Every structure is written in C-alpha cells, then in structure tokens.
Image 1 (cartoon, rainbow, N blue to C red):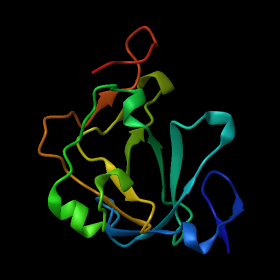
Image 2: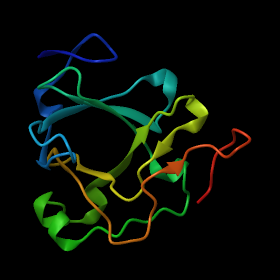
Image 3: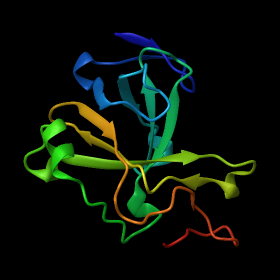
Length: 148
C-alpha cells in the first residue's frame, strides 16, 4: 500500500510492516498505526516512526545506546504481556528525539522509550520507573556525542 509521509513523500509500505500501538504515543492517542521508515544514508541508529493515518504525525527516533551506552531500561512484565514478547529479546527500544533550535541543541527522551515487538508488530510508549532524563542532550557542548 502507498502512504504519504511528512518527510519522504509517498512511499510503498508492506502491510505486514505496520506496527499497531497498544498504548499510543503520549499526546497522540488517536493514532495507533505506524511504520518505521529508514534512510540508508543516515545509518542504523536513526529511523522515523511515521503514522499511516496522518502524514503530519512522524517522530524521529534514535537508538538510545548510541547516546547512552549504558542505557538499560527495565521493561515491566505487563509491557511484555501487552506486546506478546516472550522472550524479551524480541523487543527493540527507540527514543524520540526533539530537534532543538539548532541541531546541536537536540535532545532525546530516555524516560519514555518506544518499545516494539517486530514479531507481533505491536508497539507502545512506556514510562520507566528508572531515573532517566526526559531531555537528554544528544551532543555535549563541544558537539561530540554525550555519554550519560
């Protein structure tokens, strides 16, 4: 099927790649159907979570381990149940980026990652009990990567 995206124009999406959010992205409760869009020029550590229901709803997501190598979110049992994830290894974890006034001022939300089970194509955003920041800078003041 073809969908119109915010950043990539019209793209072709296989129906088996549609991710249904069992718990929607906070603030976007009306949208539950998304696809992951990648750009090979950007590498594996970045993707776009694009709504198939509304082209303007799209989130830039980063692999949290590229920002915080010791990031280890504790996924609660109810999340595993909701995402039908047994074993837990079936899950991918992404964090939503907020692009700042300048790219160097961009942050990610480590407190509320997006968890996706690609075997069931189910996803959800969770709020971790762990003490992770909501606005973790992606870059240090010199423009290099930040380690938390």
